[in-house]
Length: 528
Image (tube, helix red, strand yellow):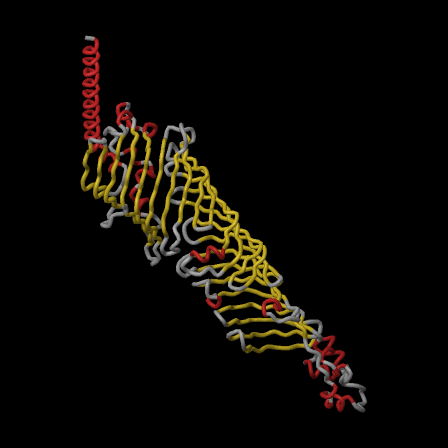
């Protein structure tokens, strides 16, 4: 009898449990079916573009929604900005009863196209303009938001998988394309209630236009409820032997903040340029070890990247640079070179300006040269001359040394002058000086050596320079020393031949010593 009662109780409990499970499934199915249409309407109300869903099917075991042929269009565009072939969303049972969402999301082969117009705005900015501007909350205020009861604190993603995604970025008027292929995203335990362990995120992708070596980004995400942001900890970007550590936070839209604000930092203590070059499709004309650090601020749609690069020694296109230091700023395009300094040829160079990366990197820069040794630059010993100056240069392709054009001012010197023995070349002067009633008209002794007339070196040449590829024009130039001055114009063609002309004047003191006779000196110098 006792056993029969136990059996009856067991069967009753089992039946009650079964009824409960069926009731829960029926309730959940109703809830899911009930939210599908208003959810789509709500999502459309938050964007300025068009959202299309080809098919939506509710699943019962386990509960969830299967979506197919999802397409997102920017306003007025015929080509979708994003498309997803298949997406599966699965819910855990019991949290739904408590009006919480604990879900698993799988997305297969999404295609994302990011286009930037001539006005600088992207298609994604146009799509999400209502959210960015805050106008989305004003749309259809009479309508009930179907997510009100499922607010962000009650949303959790236990497992997120995005497989075989494809991302392309283009800019109107530019041929280059930035492409990410074989893009996969893995994330677990994403929570927005600020409690529990941080989520783990891993992203892998390939940039075929840069390298055949895959890249990987991993970090831990923790939601900061007080700051309304997501903190990134223990972040690392790896690419072959290269490792870049990063961290910081991303602040979500809130009161007074319409966009996702970024406050990130990154650093790589040792980037071996030789190893990096082996991973690139295009050769890297540099060798050495580089340290990098910087910050990423601004917003998700308009990031501002500030980077500092340092190296004790670099070899670039066969030239050795010492104490290299650069500070770069990137908002959109081009990259701003705030400063770049390095030692070369026994002197130093400082550069500032702008560079526009691409298949052919163009640049507009200001260059300050300080005391560069011409002997070191030419590889010929014995030349004491040093070059200094300030130039403004531009190039459509900085990889080609002779593509630069521009100009500025330079000074270079000293240049030794060979001493020439003139004793055998003063016969006329001897005749003029011999036996005249007025005494010596020409100082024959002074004419015996060129050092007495023009000195032993040109102290400095100053010139306004115009550069056009291989041709350099000095217009005008002036030079001299304590003995003479000269000025004029000159052209250095193909860095080989020099053509020019100008005027040459002996200083009055030298003329007086060379021609002691006042009458002859006045006739020769025009009265001076």
